Picture 1 (cartoon, rainbow, N blue to C red):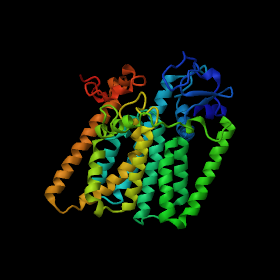
Picture 2: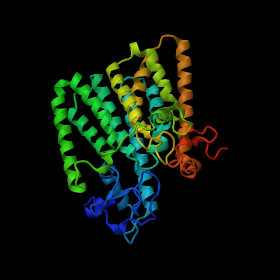
Picture 3: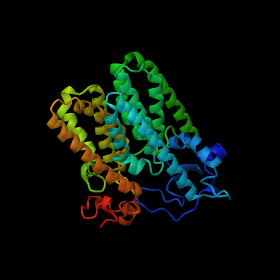
Length: 395
Protein backbone atom coordinates (compact mmCIF):
# COMPACT_ATOMS: atom_id res chain seq x y z
CA UNK A 1 0.00 0.00 0.00
CA UNK A 2 2.77 2.45 0.88
CA UNK A 3 4.59 1.56 -2.32
CA UNK A 4 1.46 2.47 -4.30
CA UNK A 5 1.12 5.73 -2.40
CA UNK A 6 4.81 6.67 -2.80
CA UNK A 7 5.74 5.29 -6.19
CA UNK A 8 2.33 4.81 -7.90
CA UNK A 9 3.44 1.36 -9.00
CA UNK A 10 2.90 -2.28 -8.07
CA UNK A 11 6.61 -2.90 -8.58
CA UNK A 12 8.54 -2.67 -5.32
CA UNK A 13 11.93 -0.98 -5.12
CA UNK A 14 14.74 -3.42 -4.33
CA UNK A 15 16.20 -1.04 -1.75
CA UNK A 16 12.96 -1.25 0.25
CA UNK A 17 12.96 -5.04 0.58
CA UNK A 18 15.32 -6.80 3.02
CA UNK A 19 17.53 -9.57 1.65
CA UNK A 20 17.32 -12.81 3.59
CA UNK A 21 18.77 -16.26 3.64
CA UNK A 22 16.85 -18.51 1.22
CA UNK A 23 13.45 -19.37 2.70
CA UNK A 24 13.58 -23.14 2.83
CA UNK A 25 10.06 -23.99 3.98
CA UNK A 26 8.52 -26.45 1.48
CA UNK A 27 6.20 -24.79 -1.01
CA UNK A 28 7.79 -21.34 -0.82
CA UNK A 29 10.24 -19.78 -3.24
CA UNK A 30 13.84 -19.54 -2.05
CA UNK A 31 14.86 -16.37 -3.90
CA UNK A 32 16.60 -14.52 -1.07
CA UNK A 33 13.66 -12.18 -0.51
CA UNK A 34 10.85 -12.49 2.05
CA UNK A 35 8.45 -15.24 1.00
CA UNK A 36 5.78 -12.64 0.20
CA UNK A 37 7.89 -11.34 -2.70
CA UNK A 38 8.00 -12.81 -6.20
CA UNK A 39 10.56 -11.93 -8.86
CA UNK A 40 8.70 -11.67 -12.20
CA UNK A 41 10.64 -10.62 -15.31
CA UNK A 42 13.21 -8.94 -13.09
CA UNK A 43 10.56 -7.00 -11.12
CA UNK A 44 9.87 -7.42 -7.41
CA UNK A 45 6.12 -7.90 -6.95
CA UNK A 46 3.90 -8.77 -4.03
CA UNK A 47 3.22 -12.51 -4.24
CA UNK A 48 -0.30 -12.40 -2.81
CA UNK A 49 -3.43 -10.66 -4.20
CA UNK A 50 -3.22 -6.87 -4.34
CA UNK A 51 -6.89 -6.28 -3.51
CA UNK A 52 -6.25 -5.82 0.22
CA UNK A 53 -3.42 -3.41 -0.52
CA UNK A 54 -5.59 -1.26 -2.78
CA UNK A 55 -8.60 -1.26 -0.43
CA UNK A 56 -6.34 -0.35 2.49
CA UNK A 57 -4.88 2.74 0.76
CA UNK A 58 -7.05 5.33 2.58
CA UNK A 59 -6.32 3.78 5.98
CA UNK A 60 -2.58 3.55 5.29
CA UNK A 61 -2.52 7.18 4.10
CA UNK A 62 -4.09 8.28 7.39
CA UNK A 63 -1.58 6.21 9.40
CA UNK A 64 1.30 7.69 7.40
CA UNK A 65 -0.04 11.20 8.06
CA UNK A 66 -0.08 10.33 11.77
CA UNK A 67 3.60 9.39 11.57
CA UNK A 68 3.25 5.57 11.44
CA UNK A 69 4.93 3.97 8.45
CA UNK A 70 6.20 0.65 7.13
CA UNK A 71 9.33 2.52 6.02
CA UNK A 72 12.26 3.70 8.11
CA UNK A 73 13.40 7.29 7.79
CA UNK A 74 16.08 6.02 5.36
CA UNK A 75 13.56 4.29 3.09
CA UNK A 76 14.10 0.73 4.31
CA UNK A 77 11.56 -1.66 5.78
CA UNK A 78 10.15 -0.92 9.24
CA UNK A 79 8.66 -4.19 10.53
CA UNK A 80 7.21 -2.63 13.70
CA UNK A 81 5.43 0.09 11.75
CA UNK A 82 4.10 -2.46 9.26
CA UNK A 83 2.71 -4.67 12.02
CA UNK A 84 1.15 -1.73 13.85
CA UNK A 85 -0.63 -0.53 10.72
CA UNK A 86 -1.86 -4.04 9.91
CA UNK A 87 -3.16 -4.67 13.43
CA UNK A 88 -4.96 -1.33 13.52
CA UNK A 89 -6.65 -1.72 10.14
CA UNK A 90 -7.57 -5.36 10.78
CA UNK A 91 -9.19 -4.56 14.15
CA UNK A 92 -11.11 -1.65 12.64
CA UNK A 93 -12.41 -3.72 9.71
CA UNK A 94 -13.57 -6.52 12.01
CA UNK A 95 -15.30 -3.98 14.26
CA UNK A 96 -17.17 -2.81 11.15
CA UNK A 97 -18.01 -6.44 10.32
CA UNK A 98 -19.48 -6.84 13.81
CA UNK A 99 -21.82 -3.94 13.10
CA UNK A 100 -22.74 -5.57 9.77
CA UNK A 101 -23.48 -8.82 11.64
CA UNK A 102 -25.70 -6.92 14.06
CA UNK A 103 -27.64 -5.21 11.26
CA UNK A 104 -28.04 -8.55 9.47
CA UNK A 105 -29.42 -10.24 12.56
CA UNK A 106 -31.83 -7.36 13.19
CA UNK A 107 -33.52 -8.10 9.87
CA UNK A 108 -35.23 -11.16 11.36
CA UNK A 109 -34.37 -11.30 15.10
CA UNK A 110 -35.21 -9.27 18.21
CA UNK A 111 -32.65 -6.79 19.57
CA UNK A 112 -31.23 -8.94 22.38
CA UNK A 113 -30.79 -11.98 20.15
CA UNK A 114 -29.12 -9.79 17.50
CA UNK A 115 -26.62 -8.40 20.02
CA UNK A 116 -25.71 -11.88 21.26
CA UNK A 117 -25.30 -13.26 17.74
CA UNK A 118 -23.20 -10.31 16.56
CA UNK A 119 -20.87 -10.58 19.56
CA UNK A 120 -20.69 -14.34 19.06
CA UNK A 121 -19.80 -13.85 15.40
CA UNK A 122 -17.02 -11.47 16.42
CA UNK A 123 -15.57 -13.17 19.50
CA UNK A 124 -16.36 -16.87 19.11
CA UNK A 125 -14.99 -17.34 15.59
CA UNK A 126 -11.82 -16.77 13.57
CA UNK A 127 -12.85 -13.11 13.30
CA UNK A 128 -11.13 -12.58 16.65
CA UNK A 129 -8.28 -15.08 16.51
CA UNK A 130 -7.28 -14.57 12.86
CA UNK A 131 -8.91 -11.79 10.88
CA UNK A 132 -8.59 -9.02 13.49
CA UNK A 133 -4.93 -9.66 14.42
CA UNK A 134 -3.11 -8.76 11.19
CA UNK A 135 -4.31 -8.01 7.69
CA UNK A 136 -4.75 -11.49 6.25
CA UNK A 137 -6.49 -11.60 2.88
CA UNK A 138 -9.37 -13.15 4.84
CA UNK A 139 -9.93 -9.82 6.63
CA UNK A 140 -11.16 -7.72 3.72
CA UNK A 141 -12.79 -10.76 2.12
CA UNK A 142 -15.14 -11.61 5.00
CA UNK A 143 -16.06 -7.95 5.48
CA UNK A 144 -17.08 -7.68 1.83
CA UNK A 145 -19.03 -10.93 1.95
CA UNK A 146 -20.60 -9.91 5.25
CA UNK A 147 -22.12 -6.94 3.42
CA UNK A 148 -23.15 -9.24 0.56
CA UNK A 149 -24.94 -11.54 3.04
CA UNK A 150 -26.75 -8.53 4.52
CA UNK A 151 -27.90 -7.37 1.08
CA UNK A 152 -29.13 -10.84 0.11
CA UNK A 153 -31.16 -11.27 3.30
CA UNK A 154 -32.59 -7.76 3.19
CA UNK A 155 -33.72 -8.30 -0.40
CA UNK A 156 -35.23 -11.66 0.45
CA UNK A 157 -37.21 -9.93 3.18
CA UNK A 158 -38.25 -7.26 0.65
CA UNK A 159 -36.91 -4.49 2.85
CA UNK A 160 -34.68 -3.21 0.07
CA UNK A 161 -34.83 -3.01 -3.69
CA UNK A 162 -32.57 -4.97 -5.94
CA UNK A 163 -28.90 -3.94 -5.82
CA UNK A 164 -27.25 -6.08 -8.51
CA UNK A 165 -24.52 -3.53 -9.29
CA UNK A 166 -23.51 -3.25 -5.63
CA UNK A 167 -23.55 -7.04 -5.24
CA UNK A 168 -21.37 -7.61 -8.31
CA UNK A 169 -18.93 -4.88 -7.25
CA UNK A 170 -18.54 -6.20 -3.71
CA UNK A 171 -17.99 -9.75 -4.94
CA UNK A 172 -15.56 -8.67 -7.64
CA UNK A 173 -13.41 -6.92 -5.06
CA UNK A 174 -13.64 -9.96 -2.81
CA UNK A 175 -12.14 -11.95 -5.70
CA UNK A 176 -9.38 -9.36 -6.11
CA UNK A 177 -8.66 -9.86 -2.39
CA UNK A 178 -8.70 -13.68 -2.33
CA UNK A 179 -9.20 -16.15 -5.21
CA UNK A 180 -11.31 -18.57 -3.16
CA UNK A 181 -14.00 -15.89 -3.39
CA UNK A 182 -14.84 -17.52 -6.71
CA UNK A 183 -16.78 -20.16 -4.74
CA UNK A 184 -19.46 -17.84 -3.29
CA UNK A 185 -19.41 -15.81 -6.51
CA UNK A 186 -20.39 -18.92 -8.48
CA UNK A 187 -23.09 -19.89 -5.98
CA UNK A 188 -24.63 -16.42 -5.85
CA UNK A 189 -24.48 -16.08 -9.63
CA UNK A 190 -26.56 -19.26 -9.94
CA UNK A 191 -28.94 -17.86 -7.31
CA UNK A 192 -29.31 -14.57 -9.22
CA UNK A 193 -29.85 -16.35 -12.52
CA UNK A 194 -32.46 -18.66 -11.00
CA UNK A 195 -34.44 -16.32 -8.75
CA UNK A 196 -33.67 -12.75 -9.88
CA UNK A 197 -33.48 -12.85 -13.62
CA UNK A 198 -34.70 -9.26 -13.94
CA UNK A 199 -31.54 -8.13 -12.13
CA UNK A 200 -29.14 -10.59 -13.71
CA UNK A 201 -28.16 -8.52 -16.77
CA UNK A 202 -26.98 -5.56 -14.66
CA UNK A 203 -25.29 -7.98 -12.27
CA UNK A 204 -23.47 -9.85 -15.06
CA UNK A 205 -22.35 -6.72 -16.93
CA UNK A 206 -20.96 -5.19 -13.75
CA UNK A 207 -19.09 -8.35 -12.78
CA UNK A 208 -17.72 -8.85 -16.30
CA UNK A 209 -16.51 -5.23 -16.41
CA UNK A 210 -14.57 -5.60 -13.16
CA UNK A 211 -13.11 -8.91 -14.39
CA UNK A 212 -11.87 -7.31 -17.63
CA UNK A 213 -10.16 -4.56 -15.62
CA UNK A 214 -8.54 -7.20 -13.42
CA UNK A 215 -7.26 -9.17 -16.42
CA UNK A 216 -5.79 -5.97 -17.91
CA UNK A 217 -4.07 -5.18 -14.60
CA UNK A 218 -2.65 -8.71 -14.44
CA UNK A 219 -1.38 -8.62 -18.01
CA UNK A 220 0.36 -5.27 -17.52
CA UNK A 221 1.82 -6.21 -14.13
CA UNK A 222 2.63 -9.93 -14.46
CA UNK A 223 2.54 -10.55 -18.20
CA UNK A 224 -0.20 -13.17 -17.72
CA UNK A 225 -3.99 -13.00 -17.67
CA UNK A 226 -4.03 -14.09 -14.03
CA UNK A 227 -1.39 -13.50 -11.34
CA UNK A 228 0.52 -16.58 -10.25
CA UNK A 229 -1.31 -16.85 -6.93
CA UNK A 230 -4.61 -17.24 -8.79
CA UNK A 231 -3.27 -20.16 -10.79
CA UNK A 232 -2.98 -22.37 -7.72
CA UNK A 233 -2.64 -26.12 -8.05
CA UNK A 234 -4.99 -28.33 -6.07
CA UNK A 235 -4.15 -31.89 -5.17
CA UNK A 236 -6.14 -34.93 -4.08
CA UNK A 237 -3.07 -36.47 -2.48
CA UNK A 238 -3.89 -35.51 1.12
CA UNK A 239 -7.64 -35.06 0.72
CA UNK A 240 -8.79 -37.86 3.03
CA UNK A 241 -6.48 -36.59 5.76
CA UNK A 242 -7.33 -32.93 5.21
CA UNK A 243 -11.13 -33.29 5.21
CA UNK A 244 -11.42 -34.49 8.82
CA UNK A 245 -8.44 -32.34 9.88
CA UNK A 246 -10.24 -29.16 8.90
CA UNK A 247 -13.29 -30.18 10.95
CA UNK A 248 -12.20 -32.01 14.09
CA UNK A 249 -8.41 -31.97 14.58
CA UNK A 250 -7.24 -30.44 17.88
CA UNK A 251 -5.20 -27.69 16.24
CA UNK A 252 -7.08 -26.98 12.98
CA UNK A 253 -10.62 -28.31 13.47
CA UNK A 254 -13.48 -25.90 12.79
CA UNK A 255 -15.85 -27.68 15.19
CA UNK A 256 -13.18 -27.64 17.92
CA UNK A 257 -12.46 -23.90 17.71
CA UNK A 258 -15.95 -22.79 16.65
CA UNK A 259 -18.32 -25.26 18.37
CA UNK A 260 -21.24 -22.96 17.57
CA UNK A 261 -20.83 -24.03 13.92
CA UNK A 262 -21.83 -27.59 14.83
CA UNK A 263 -24.67 -26.25 17.00
CA UNK A 264 -26.01 -24.17 14.08
CA UNK A 265 -25.89 -27.16 11.72
CA UNK A 266 -27.85 -29.20 14.27
CA UNK A 267 -30.52 -26.48 14.50
CA UNK A 268 -30.73 -26.28 10.72
CA UNK A 269 -31.32 -30.03 10.45
CA UNK A 270 -33.97 -29.94 13.17
CA UNK A 271 -35.86 -26.88 11.89
CA UNK A 272 -35.28 -27.34 8.16
CA UNK A 273 -38.94 -27.54 7.18
CA UNK A 274 -39.76 -24.38 9.15
CA UNK A 275 -36.64 -22.44 8.15
CA UNK A 276 -37.32 -18.97 6.70
CA UNK A 277 -35.67 -17.97 3.41
CA UNK A 278 -34.59 -21.56 2.87
CA UNK A 279 -33.14 -20.93 -0.57
CA UNK A 280 -30.58 -18.59 0.99
CA UNK A 281 -29.69 -21.33 3.46
CA UNK A 282 -29.12 -23.71 0.53
CA UNK A 283 -26.73 -21.19 -1.06
CA UNK A 284 -24.83 -20.77 2.22
CA UNK A 285 -24.55 -24.51 2.86
CA UNK A 286 -23.34 -25.05 -0.70
CA UNK A 287 -20.63 -22.40 -0.26
CA UNK A 288 -19.56 -23.86 3.10
CA UNK A 289 -19.34 -27.41 1.72
CA UNK A 290 -17.41 -26.53 -1.44
CA UNK A 291 -15.06 -24.26 0.52
CA UNK A 292 -14.31 -27.09 2.96
CA UNK A 293 -13.48 -29.46 0.10
CA UNK A 294 -11.36 -26.91 -1.80
CA UNK A 295 -9.17 -25.96 1.16
CA UNK A 296 -8.71 -29.68 1.81
CA UNK A 297 -7.27 -30.09 -1.71
CA UNK A 298 -4.74 -27.31 -1.09
CA UNK A 299 -1.23 -28.79 -0.77
CA UNK A 300 -0.91 -26.50 2.30
CA UNK A 301 -4.18 -27.82 3.80
CA UNK A 302 -3.06 -27.22 7.41
CA UNK A 303 -2.81 -23.47 6.76
CA UNK A 304 0.86 -22.95 7.57
CA UNK A 305 1.99 -20.94 10.57
CA UNK A 306 -1.33 -19.77 11.96
CA UNK A 307 -3.75 -20.31 14.82
CA UNK A 308 -6.59 -22.77 14.58
CA UNK A 309 -8.80 -23.24 11.50
CA UNK A 310 -7.55 -20.19 9.59
CA UNK A 311 -8.48 -21.52 6.15
CA UNK A 312 -12.15 -21.80 7.12
CA UNK A 313 -12.24 -18.10 8.05
CA UNK A 314 -13.68 -17.55 4.55
CA UNK A 315 -16.96 -19.24 5.53
CA UNK A 316 -17.70 -17.17 8.65
CA UNK A 317 -20.19 -14.78 6.93
CA UNK A 318 -22.13 -17.74 5.49
CA UNK A 319 -22.26 -19.59 8.80
CA UNK A 320 -23.44 -16.38 10.43
CA UNK A 321 -26.25 -15.98 7.91
CA UNK A 322 -27.56 -19.52 8.44
CA UNK A 323 -27.20 -18.98 12.21
CA UNK A 324 -29.53 -15.99 11.94
CA UNK A 325 -32.10 -18.07 10.04
CA UNK A 326 -31.84 -20.95 12.52
CA UNK A 327 -32.20 -18.59 15.49
CA UNK A 328 -35.42 -17.26 14.01
CA UNK A 329 -36.85 -20.75 14.36
CA UNK A 330 -35.58 -21.00 17.93
CA UNK A 331 -37.17 -17.65 18.84
CA UNK A 332 -40.51 -19.00 17.57
CA UNK A 333 -40.12 -22.34 19.39
CA UNK A 334 -43.34 -22.96 21.33
CA UNK A 335 -41.96 -25.58 23.75
CA UNK A 336 -40.33 -23.71 26.67
CA UNK A 337 -38.32 -26.69 27.90
CA UNK A 338 -36.77 -27.41 24.51
CA UNK A 339 -36.09 -23.72 23.98
CA UNK A 340 -34.27 -23.39 27.33
CA UNK A 341 -32.09 -26.41 26.58
CA UNK A 342 -31.20 -25.13 23.10
CA UNK A 343 -30.44 -21.61 24.34
CA UNK A 344 -28.23 -22.99 27.14
CA UNK A 345 -26.30 -25.17 24.68
CA UNK A 346 -25.92 -22.23 22.32
CA UNK A 347 -24.54 -19.96 25.04
CA UNK A 348 -22.10 -22.67 26.15
CA UNK A 349 -20.91 -23.08 22.55
CA UNK A 350 -20.37 -19.32 22.22
CA UNK A 351 -18.50 -19.17 25.53
CA UNK A 352 -16.30 -22.11 24.52
CA UNK A 353 -15.60 -20.52 21.15
CA UNK A 354 -14.71 -17.22 22.81
CA UNK A 355 -12.18 -19.03 25.01
CA UNK A 356 -10.65 -20.88 22.06
CA UNK A 357 -10.38 -17.85 19.81
CA UNK A 358 -9.44 -15.50 22.63
CA UNK A 359 -6.39 -17.65 23.31
CA UNK A 360 -5.31 -17.25 19.71
CA UNK A 361 -5.95 -13.52 19.79
CA UNK A 362 -4.09 -12.56 22.98
CA UNK A 363 -1.68 -15.37 23.90
CA UNK A 364 1.97 -15.14 22.83
CA UNK A 365 2.36 -18.87 23.51
CA UNK A 366 -0.23 -19.82 20.90
CA UNK A 367 1.33 -17.54 18.28
CA UNK A 368 4.63 -19.39 18.59
CA UNK A 369 3.12 -22.89 18.59
CA UNK A 370 3.18 -23.49 14.82
CA UNK A 371 6.80 -22.38 14.23
CA UNK A 372 8.17 -24.26 17.25
CA UNK A 373 6.33 -27.43 16.20
CA UNK A 374 7.44 -26.84 12.61
CA UNK A 375 4.02 -27.75 11.23
CA UNK A 376 5.01 -26.92 7.67
CA UNK A 377 7.43 -29.85 7.73
CA UNK A 378 5.34 -32.01 10.06
CA UNK A 379 1.65 -31.21 9.46
CA UNK A 380 0.65 -34.43 11.22
CA UNK A 381 1.35 -32.60 14.50
CA UNK A 382 -1.98 -30.79 14.20
CA UNK A 383 -3.56 -34.13 15.26
CA UNK A 384 -1.65 -34.36 18.55
CA UNK A 385 -4.32 -34.24 21.30
CA UNK A 386 -1.59 -34.13 23.96
CA UNK A 387 -0.24 -30.86 22.57
CA UNK A 388 -3.14 -28.90 21.02
CA UNK A 389 -2.50 -25.35 19.89
CA UNK A 390 -5.22 -23.82 22.07
CA UNK A 391 -3.48 -25.21 25.18
CA UNK A 392 -0.07 -23.75 24.38
CA UNK A 393 1.36 -22.14 27.50
CA UNK A 394 -1.25 -23.72 29.80
CA UNK A 395 0.41 -27.08 30.33
